Length: 118
Image (cartoon, one colour):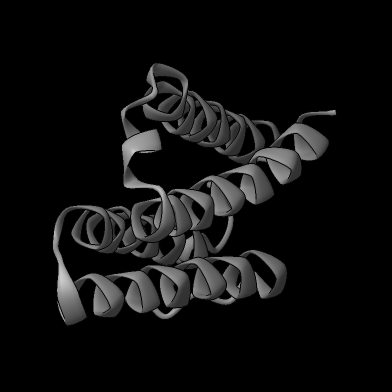
């Protein structure tokens, strides 16, 4: 059940991020909506908590856990580049967006293969 919740919120996070980027281009005034401001934080909090629960329940820290550290580092990159994408303007915004999506894809690949960069 926790894995299903985690998967749902993985895709919710991606949809939320790309949706907010689209809104920032086409309808920036909608970004001031209270729900649009709060929802990503709720989604990402549930995503993080479900991920931590999976790590603890799966006893993944008992064996080789370099992949978990890799995912955490990539998560920090996703957050940092996401902030860059949402706050900056021009080409910097799109560099941040592409870098955030790249981190997201790398997190996904790392989760599937359980093979970290470290």
